Image (tube, rainbow over all chains, first blue to last red):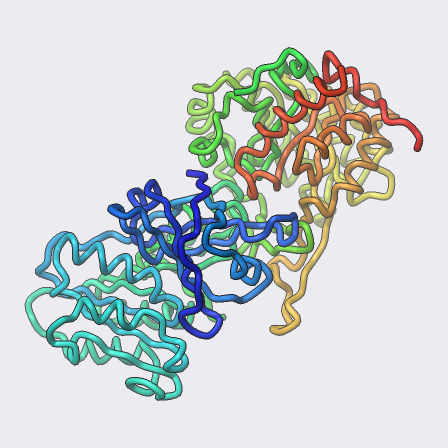
Length: 273
Length: 307
């Protein structure tokens, strides 16, 4: 859908990180966790292309939809100037979305790194609405304490047993454990008990996802990752946003905007970059 | 829904309800944009470049945004001509829009074989020949930058089919008029120009090229002045129809190409910014003609005056 929703709120939630909420009942109803919106940031031909943002929250009752993004370049800098009352121009929902767990008997491990926590919030909401929130644990990492973005939102899903279900890491040790979120994942793996294997949902920087995928593979765990890519069209027409995946004995290139952004971690051919 | 008698026309025997086509490589095979655009509103669809066997394309990164434009090094990823015929064309046949298949090859023989397989296939209105592919039998020099190779490819395709043959010219040459004339002599029914301009981009912080392929093709508003100049030069020099491509974002841009001598135009990168760009441009052309008192788009073709 090509939509022009009105902006409700727009403000900083961490240094250079903003949450932009807008009113779009159609998008709120249609959006699946893991999908994204392709947003026009400027009013002129420069910067030219739309920017993709994963959907952070979508409430079908109120029609409120939100994205969380980091100001990194000229596009996001322009987006940051938009005010409530103004209209956004976006294409969405795009992409394939996470596959939700079918029943509550399996542990659900949400693993987020930095900005990757943003789409995991909508995922957590939908899991809570369908199979319940008790099966979920959260492992989130960021560079520093102030770079964490969804802590309060995730805590809401753990009214009891917060200590064991909600783990935080920071690179500099300013909050939670000093280290990487992948190390938190390893601790969960070591502490695994119970009859049913967990399903891992991960989103974050590529280096983090590569490590999460390695851990999942080593322990034969089901793992879905949400990837990022530079995009031109965002709808699957231009073939610009591809990722390398296994194809039989060889490989092929598939579109992050169409066959993704969510992929089975074992399918992705992780680069060494 | 755009239907105006002012816009109806025909290029190389292909009848179009309006002279606004969507450019190869920017619209896939139509399906991806069908949620946003009524394909039957388009003048024509030019498909993604189609080769004999599937081509995997280049590794990422394949795109880089530039000032008022973008570079692409997709590498012509496609599933091959047999998949096009079996899967994509039947789906497109549901719509009332001419489908022009863009064809690519690594050798002259490959181009000819693709053309042969598409000859007589239901739902194919014409062939656009992407001559900017590297010729692997001649060290990877692009066909379209060598006069002899250009002639060979166009003749071979012309002999292999009864369909209209429309070579898409490369702008990465010193004299594009020379190449246009070669295509006329080799049997082209029309020419389309321009394809992308070769460029590169570097990330100053990582000190790396932004594209895995190092170079890529520049498209978007940045290339319009070059495209417009080349369309004007070619239209002056040849009698066959000229299809103008390059940075067209609006009806006003499109009018400039018609004034320069284009008989039809293609919209490419603009679709990434606005999925309905091509249809809106067609509407805008109709409004321009009405506003200026013209009865048909043909009345403004090639009528630009000295300043």
